[in-house]
Length: 164
Image (cartoon, rainbow, N blue to C red):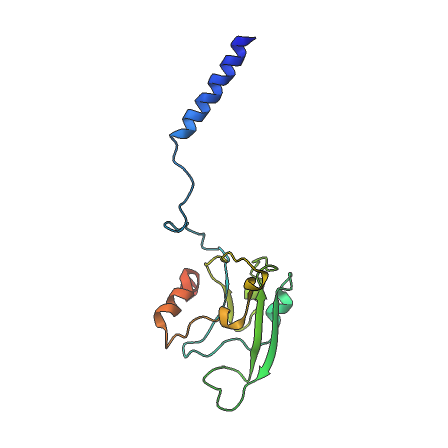
């Protein structure tokens, strides 16, 4: 009986020693970034055209398509003199996405007829409060392509570059 018990201990120790010399799958996050798949769906981005005008026309199709009801928006009419800000006569005055409800399914991206919203390859950061997960229009808008071209290209990411 004692022999069998000692044999089991030796088998357990062999497994432990075998795992000690294997390559570790852990990634040291701030220093190393994990490569994501090309189909990874991350944070939402509200797109602009080449002149920096917002693509969103507040049609509401993304909010209707969202199964988690995470998107809320309010439409407004473009005023005279705001042609450089918005492409169409109607725009989203308020656009919010509740990331606590979002399931990152991509249906909002597929429903948008103007390619105004897409899911980037940036994952949602951690936060301490619930209000930090409700992203407003200012948080979601891509940087201005004329004023900030480097930040605009970085925000486009690989996925948007593949579409072009």
